[in-house]
Amino acid sequence: MPKTDAFTWDELPAAGGNGAERREIRGTGASLRRIRTKAGAVAARHSHDHEQFLLVLEGRARLDCESGPVELRPGMVVRFDPDAWHAAEFLADTVLVEVNLARAP
Image 1: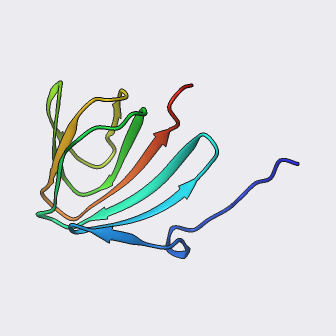
Image 2: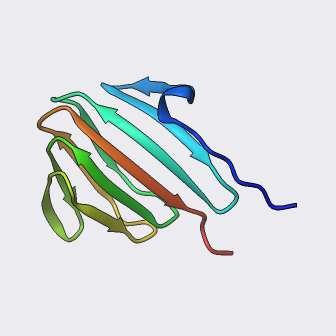
Image 3: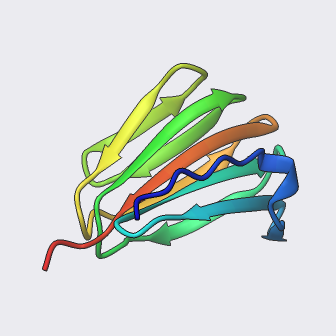
């Protein structure tokens, strides 16, 4: 039987490291993650084997990616193709929501 789940971010377990706190909701075909990152934190260059979206809620960051640099600010949405590399430097305390879609079979 289909069901509906409801969450608040703060009730979810936190994981962290490198100046970031992550809380995640996993679904059957996607995951949703809230990331709180401190100013000065860096995300090293990496890629994923799935499509990914970033929604910037608060703060500022410089994103480096294959298509060139992007200055992240509140209200922005960024989409990455599978295997598109990216890296980030957080210029202010930042809150992002990350949507990770399952890789197509």
